[in-house]
Amino acid sequence: MTTGREKERQRLPFRVDPFRFAHDAVELESTLPLAQMKRLSAMLYQSEGTVAISLAFAVDILGVSSLQGRLQTSLDLVCQRCLEPMHVDVDTVLALGFARSDAGVEQIPTGLEPVRVEGGQVDLLQLLEDEIMLALPQIPRHVENECPVSALQSNMADESAGRETRSQERENPFSVLAGLKKSE
Image (cartoon, rainbow, N blue to C red; front, side, top):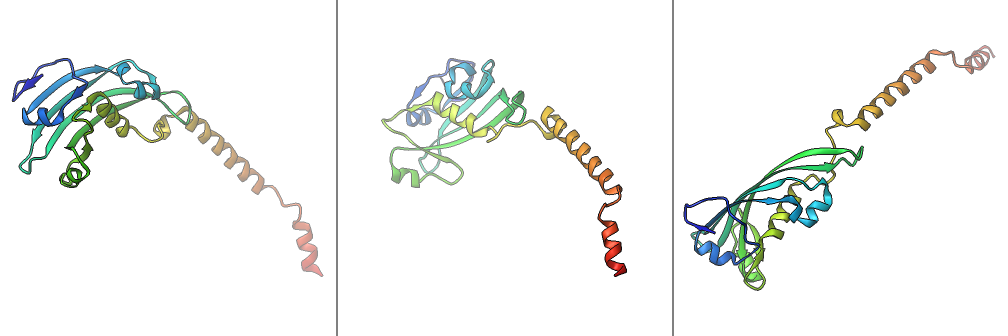
């Protein structure tokens, strides 16, 4: 744990008192293996890799304890169109405000996402995992022209359009009937 402007790579504490950290102006920089984030790992094609974490706790002018930070990682998700792996880079910014009660949540400025702290501590690992999961696409899919299924669907659509054009070029078998109706 570092205070003030000192920064170094360190082991991330999982349970923290955000109010004490904010009062002490704690800044943390660390990397965390993706495999430690169990809920996130279950969503991944492979849970290899790390998350780069940069956090700064502070108390603002209004006395609100806050956390500003940044999370960066590269993930391999499963494309829901073709079920093949796809690469997603996550670079998300955190801006959280902590409160001990519902009344305190109301006092958090609009630029901060409110977090109600139960029992004086937050599970930092769970909080960071939640933020990464919120940064992911709701339905992971390759860009349309990069997805093997999209290319296959596009080819099938082109073939279907070609068949329609050929069928329109053929003479309509009922055109003879239309001619008889006009002659009557």
